[in-house]
Length: 383
Figure 1 (cartoon, rainbow, N blue to C red):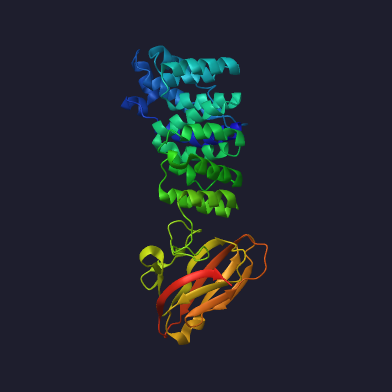
Figure 2: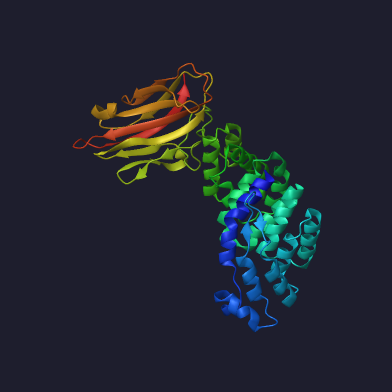
């Protein structure tokens, strides 16, 4: 798994690296072949020529520096402090132990340099050293922000291996600024998503995450059926879903962290907007508009037989155009559906093995008819 992650990051990022490498000498950038012989002291042109010869291994995606050695040697001869030239020469060594030792020696000189850190990461992966590999990847993320989007998939790939989690936690406890990009990443498999959820809960306040990134992770966990991690994250974020007042079966209208809180329509002519303290919600459905205006997930309310909705929606003659739908989140089977009735609407809960249900409130005001409006003043489970 480690080699797969390294192959991924190197294959994707080498092109960005080669194109984005900034050299101080303008002529070296534009025409290194011309610039190289003009100075006996400048290493830039030779380093640029070496970069042009670097590719990726056909078998595993690791960096192939075999064609870059001569130019790297010329660059190193002119600048013995060039970690990039030294890294190329180190990676060209056939013996893995010797290669690792040389890269470590170069890193004692400086930890800056994309090629150096790519090499350190590759060497650590070969040795199965998760901590060192992630430390090199962290440095790349910190030093070279323009390639973060290319590096995040490698981070996610590491997470598919449970043995990397302690090393991940160590890196993330430094609160790196790229942490939010990792936690909101949507391209990983179910294993990496679950690991992200466990890491996020374990880290708690030790890492600074934008609420939008936490919301994305929460949605990803639900989509991947990691319910335990999703509910633990929701609890960490301070959500309960229950209305204030002590009734554990009553729901409030908080909408900060869907899907465990409400996802609400919010357009001028079609909206469900919570009132003060999230105790009620104002509904507006203008003529020609309609659809689900409020959806959320809830844990199956054991011991209850009905969902009760108290409201003041009008006009009464059009309440049949509003409905509540209960769906099993695991199977997407519709469990119950009921039209709105004046003042109080009820939906009967069937016997089911589902652990999570989605509540969906919907309404439609047909073109040419009066719009629907009013408040939902309470929503709760009961008997």
